Image 1 (cartoon, rainbow, N blue to C red):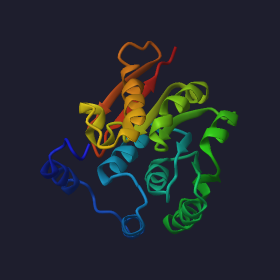
Image 2 (cartoon, rainbow, N blue to C red):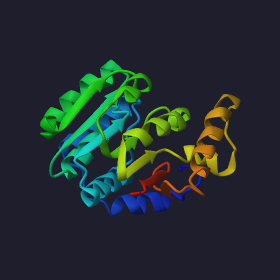
Image 3 (cartoon, rainbow, N blue to C red):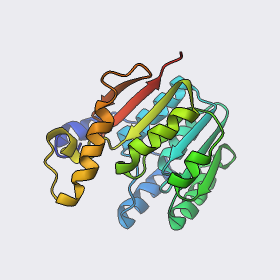
Length: 215
């Protein structure tokens, strides 16, 4: 939510976080140099905390990038596996190397491919799903996630405020209109929903924490 949140507040929140280890520092440096989107530090910390609280045994991540969020979740798990899907081969290969460096390879099942094709084919049930892929497709992924997310499971969705555009509908280019309005509709559907309970946290570019009911 970079256009809405005060920058000083963001810096203060980041000052409260533990320092990244060498692997994560190198990943962030690479991401900045090569314009690869990765989770903001405060969001990565939240992901780790949610994983420690929920202790999922099966996690699905839609959008690996170079694996920053994957590593944060894997390190917080006591058992189980993260299945993570990435479309771009170069990012997928680099993520595999970072998983090796971070010592989480045995806990991660990394798949190269199009999540729009692969996710509907999944038969595994998941305790937690993290969505950080094409923002205009979140609604499409939700319809699939409903089938494979266990009752009582967590769905965590990143970048739901889209630089603040969802808040004030003041997007800079007309071609972004569809994405912004789709995201707004995605969030508004949880206002009166008997299956999911949602809270949007204004960390990073906005994180939706959504819990599926147990009944």
